Image (tube, rainbow, N blue to C red; front, side, top):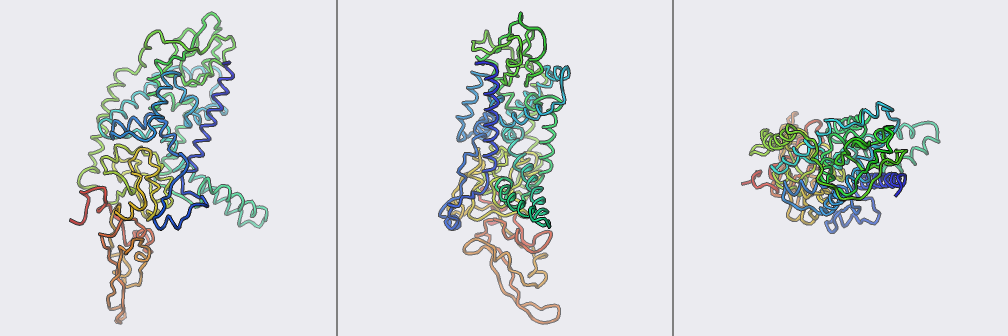
Length: 540
């Protein structure tokens, strides 16, 4: 195949998979299908489900499947897709990085649009450097940590990183800005702006959400994402060359690939065009050893060479290529870091008997130890949650639980007949339970307790039954007792005092979310009593 055809095939493939990723990202939300009978959903006769294969890209990542296997001893659904990527890499090199990876495509675009490096500066930036060892250090540290029982691969897995950044920071941020703009247009005296605002909001809402969504720490996730993108202005595809653990894994497999770059030294004029266009700093120029572990299979060098001195051909490698120059210190450092992560993650006490009482996991979550061995911190459950209650944890779950999902009842509540979070989890850290199972077992994520010092009926003799009205269980877990009290004016009045039946409470948090007491709610949810832990119980 001609060089220009290969390059165009790569561009078309990149565009297709990036658009597919964005489509699945948008579709990972509460179904808006008019054919969904929500009366059946609310009566627990039908489960909510996302019909698009939104877990496809996570199944494509061999890192997700391997880390779940070695850490949680679980073979996830779709692991064969990841195995296929590894086999394809052994045959053709890092074609996943060049043709498929949506995060790699975004880096490619950022590096390509008005490049800040040109001429000799680009040649210098595309020389192989020692910093390219870092990704192998990262891979070793994450893999050893997973073997030791702490799976933090999702922090830097490119699919998880991209989905988390877009779903929790970029899309909500853009949505807030657009809705503010639409409000200004709708309130304008110019009628054309009024009409445009309504039409634009109808078109934008399916993409950016029908209401403002906010996630804890979204600013940090967004800033980190922008920094990673900005680094492409310093070195093209900085992430892919330097930090990506999936790229390191595929690079190790690509050492034995049968698709190889052949160089004709006699034709080379040392014009450096191949080096300028190289995306992986893989030393494509004749006279230097080709770094096939770094080659991203973009075929730019093949296309750029005016003398036809470069070509890609299928041939058996003459011998196993020298291993990537990782350095003994880097390997040792990766091993030490990987072994240290699980122990450091336990120093903060999150896995001991005393844990954060407000660390509430989604319904269907595995026990904490097992949960942390499988959770990829990808943000899929947070994006799919219709009430915005699932948020990324920061310090609440300790270092071991950084960016894992937790429920914040002030931001939402767990819908009584919703199990979307378990249905979208790519690894099974949140089990895919049915609504009937959630209600009839029932599955408890915590327990409610009344803060009598803040509760209006208890402390202020004021009438309020909001928590009891919203309680979704049948019979209700919050019940009222009428008592006669003496008001400040000396008169006797009847007040209905709320109590919680811990045997019926599921910890859904709607009572806390709807409590009219400003600031700290007068009824709050704690993790004690959760079904997933026999140890974390209130009732003996």
